[in-house]
Image 1 (tube, rainbow, N blue to C red):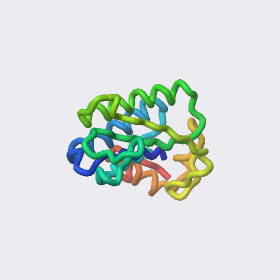
Image 2: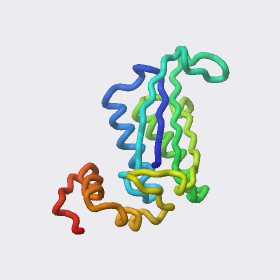
Image 3: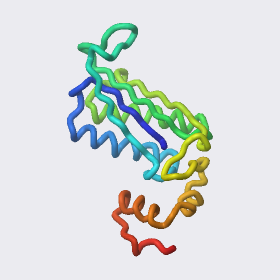
Image 4: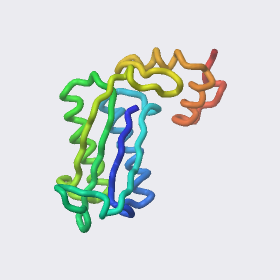
Length: 156
């Protein structure tokens, strides 16, 4: 959590663009919210033009991208508004599409309604205590995935 789903016409993005979106969407979220990046997920959802409708019409022939972010509730309105704008800019830049062709939605879910890594998620700002409450081998794996740490980095 957070989970960001980028929906684009099939074949619209290169592998490099997909990788960049994964990195930069995560970066925007973490920079603005202060949340650790190990929570962030970015999913690229490619759909056939004929299966994607805007205004009741198939998307065929247009250059439209939709980003839907589901984040933990509790952030101030100004934070969410800043995220909307920054996420639009990132998607526009990486996908090489005009900003007006990018739609960004943010939905909120209570942290206590999400379970990841075998534990119910903490409220925003309580991530460190939550992280310290999970088993050391899981903390090591998360840090290794994120930063390349090894088992000697953490103590029981």
